[in-house]
Length: 137
Image 1: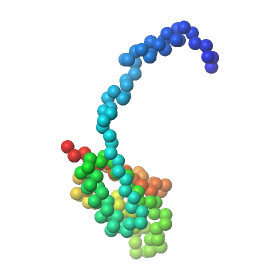
Image 2: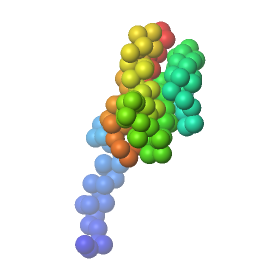
Image 3: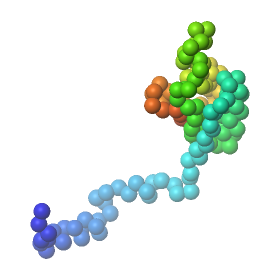
Image 4: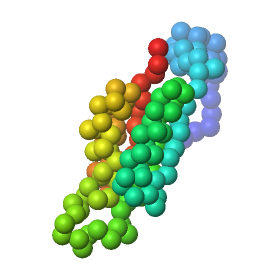
């Protein structure tokens, strides 16, 4: 590429910079004082029962405080000792799978939720997932 700019190139560039109708400024439309509140909860080491109680309280509290997104850290379940137990479900004995199922089956919690990111839940390489909450109007 040549580094030689013609006078026409310079003039065209200056006209482009001075013109406001060529590109939409996306920052103009976004309110600067509006923050997206995100909270995280780490459920490592919790039993299924403890984790279910904790996530219920956390979702309720986050919803009431206007939080838009919750990141739930469960771990991948790689160290779970439940793989060898024939009387337990391989997936639902791990928090990674049981917490989203618990939330999905709890109608009171689902009234506050827009979406659970099931793609992350089903990914073997992720030990967390997101919950998107409704906003109180």
